[in-house]
Length: 107
Image (cartoon, helix red, strand yellow):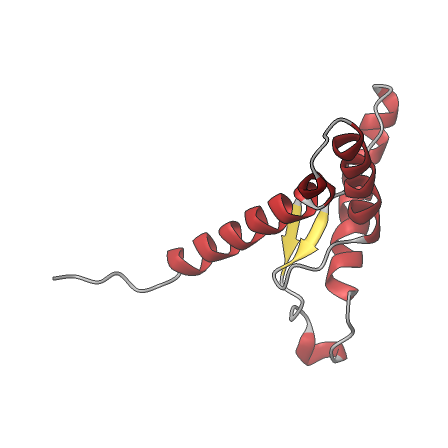
């Protein structure tokens, strides 16, 4: 899993939507794909930015997971369960990073 800020490199090249995610996804693939293939595993990069946008491979993977969850659940709420849980986890992680950067309050 890889989280990147969509504003990285903004001064150098201007803002391009999704650029940070695609770059992070490509970096993960180049770093881990060979090892996974050698061990007969499939590598699916899971990259997202701090605004909550997901990389295309991550979306495809989550849709597959969501189909399995939906086919094994009778509830209508099960259709969006996977994306809502992942969205919550991303928000929680971003919030933790922001809180960690706050200056310490001494009483």
